[in-house]
Every structure is written in C-alpha cells, then in structure tokens.
Length: 228
Ligand SMILES: [Zn+2]
Image 1: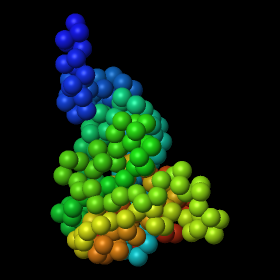
Image 2 (image 1 turned 90 degrees about the horizontal axis):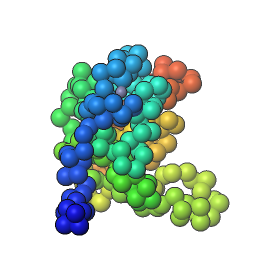
Image 3 (image 1 turned 90 degrees about the vertical axis):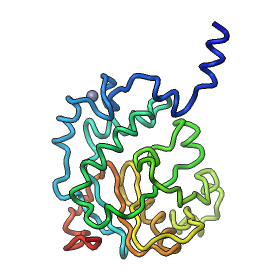
Image 4 (image 1 turned 120 degrees about the vertical axis):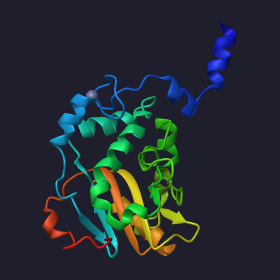
C-alpha cells in the first residue's frame, strides 16, 4: 500500500488529470467541459452578437456567452481547488463557439491574461491558460501582485491596473488574448497595453463569458469587425 501511495504521489498535475474521470464543470455529472444537459442550458446564454466591446484603440473584446446560469457555475467551479481539469473542455467549447466569428484572427497566436501567483497557488492551475489551449504562448507576466498594490502610495493607486502586466519580447501585429470572464474590461485593457508596447496593433480579447455593459453593446462597440 505504501508503495502504491508513493507512486501516486509522484503522479501529479496533467497526468493525474487524465486518470480522474471527467466531470461536467457545472454539475459534476460525467462529461467533458459541460455535460449534454448543461450544454443545452448554455445555449440559452449565447450572446448572438458576441457581446462586442471596444476596450481601447485596436482592442476588441468578444465572448460567446453571458456570465449567468450554468456558464457562471462552470467558471466558478473550475476555480475550486482540484476541479480545474474541466477548464480544458470549457476551452474547447469556447473555441468551437468562437470559430465562426474569428475571421483572420483565427490564425493569430493566442496568449492569456496571467493570474496572480496567489490565485495559481489557491486553484492549483491557471484557468485562462487552460482555456487558451496548449498552443498558447505565455507572453505576459504580472509585474505587481495584489498584496503589493495595497502598499502603493495613493497617487499611484489611482492610476488603476495600468502597468500590472509586462511583455518581455516582441509580439506579432495581431494577438488573441484569453481570459475567463470580462466584467469591466479594466484587466484586459491593462494587459492589452503591455502587448501594444511589445508591438501588437490588433488585439482580440476572448473570454468564455461577459457581463453585459449596462449601456448596451451599441454604445461601445465598433461598427464592423476590425480584425477581418
Ligand atoms: Zn452538467
């Protein structure tokens, strides 16, 4: 028994994920990403227009789902320690939903908005990275952690999240940047600024879900997809 335990302890991370039966992220029934029942429920949360929001010059955000119901449950669930494996299936759902909307951006490289070290430790994984897929590149890094933010002087804090991210290499003209949820768009805007400093001129922010802008999509969205 001790020998078996010792072997199990050496099998960890992605290998262990393969050994554990796959569960629906929203309801924990057997399933990959979402089970059939939750997929049907998710269909009612689709944003038919992709919930476009123009965050900054050259930075457009899109999401296939509203942040509500099974989608909100699934996202909260994969952030629970030990349940991150289902995020890979949610990522496959994300790209299947987004494929018809990506246009030329389907060929752009993907990166993700990095989580803080504390969140990665607590969750056992970096959820945006799992959503982005295995081909995604880790171009961004956090330069300030949340704890450090509290210690900043008042005048610096007022500058908001700008400068929280850095990209240490040159990146292509067009980049797809992935996160789990878009709420105010402030984090994505700050991360996109780091990619712009590194050479990107068109950044498509893709999140699994978006909290609708209360002013409505027409108030803050481009007339045409700029990335086509
Ligand atoms: Zn389910």
